Amino acid sequence: MSISVIIPVGHKDHDFKLIDQIKDKFDNFEIILAASYQNNEVKKLEEKVDKFISIHNSTRAKALNSGAEVAKYDRLWFLHLDSNISLINKIDFEKIDDEKINTFLLKFDDEKLKYNSIGANLRTKYLKLPFGDQSFIVEKKLFNFLGGFTEGLDKGEDHEFIWKSKTVGIKINIIENFILSSALKYKEHPINQTLNTVKDTVLQIFRFYKPQKKYVVCHFLKDPKSPKSKTRLRKDLTDDFVNELNENLIEILSENIQQIKKNKFIYQVSVSEKDHKEYLYKFSKITNGLFLTSQKELGNSMKEVIEFNLKYFKKVVIVGSDIPFLSASDITDSLKSTSAKNVFYPTLDGGFCLLATSDNKILDIIDKVKYGTDTVLSDLTKNVSKLLIDNRFYQDIDVKEDLVKIYKDLKEKVYSLSPTLKKLYTLLYSNQKKFSE
Image (tube, rainbow, N blue to C red; front, top):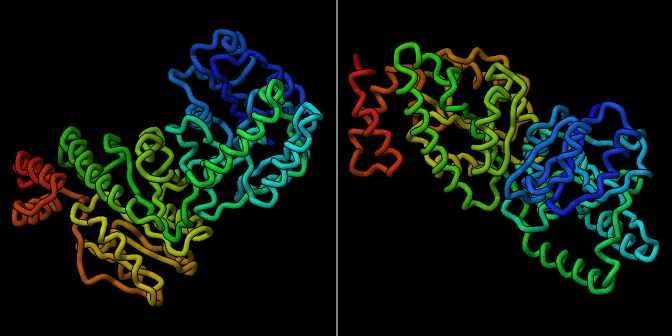
């Protein structure tokens, strides 16, 4: 079994017994230390671990996310440095459920705090609210999908992470064994510290609670500067121009994402191939999460994304990022149809730029269609029942002839365009000779 163990280290931490515990108990566990650059003691351990990350302005959330980003294995174990794993055994990891957040029960290393342990374990079992000192074991795809730990929080990043999982219906799997946690912070004022912990927990419940998400919008995109984006367009136009065009389209997409965020029942995910993960890790900060598809073909990617998301949401929307006139309200409108299980927004070239589906049966056919042809929509919809095809046709951008049509439409509406569309119009106006010849 292969697991990446991610351990955050603060600037005052100095007890590193946990590292030897892991190395003694487990083979093939990658150890990643994500440490504050101010901690000089931890730098001595750089040769003892598999990966060492030095972080400026570190917070626990930032350290955990940095470790997850470089992790080699698909299973991530987020573990506090003051944990004692002497009771944990290899067999415990056979109980991991990759579709859930896995956690252990808690004991303190001081018997005087046994009632604190009981309270923590009751909270975990009945409220499904484990905290970080119990450790989390999460499959990387699930962790990315949840957007990782929220880095803007001064504390409670573990609590907030669990509430995020609850909003999309991801459950907790309790592994029935105990992690020992340090009682150091309780020793001087045990009653006051216990009361403060209870108070913080209650306040954080009110702060972090969010209603259950019903729908997910999956935005398909690529690194705008990658030679793999707009390959047909790059054959006829310069890379500099295509890169700038892509950046404009990303701005329009970003504006739509911000507008959609106003709907508290919609979750949003950035989707791309793993080749674009460096860019996607950054871009996904404006959505709720990230989905790196393992597939190269578009049909296979859409199938993977839909299949995963239908486990958690009532309806899944997949949408492209190169349709300038597709607005946020157009995207949310696709969710309003209750009679149709599949809603398509057609494009002028015979394909589609948006699919909203609640239909598991579409998984049988969506990867069978030959994409990039002018019969994509007709080939797909002839095998789909309970469908609705929107009566508007959208213009996407694949070849330079598409830019001629986009420019014409923008010119006709120039006085009513949003700032991002005006920026696109200006770009095309300045370069029209390039794509009109």
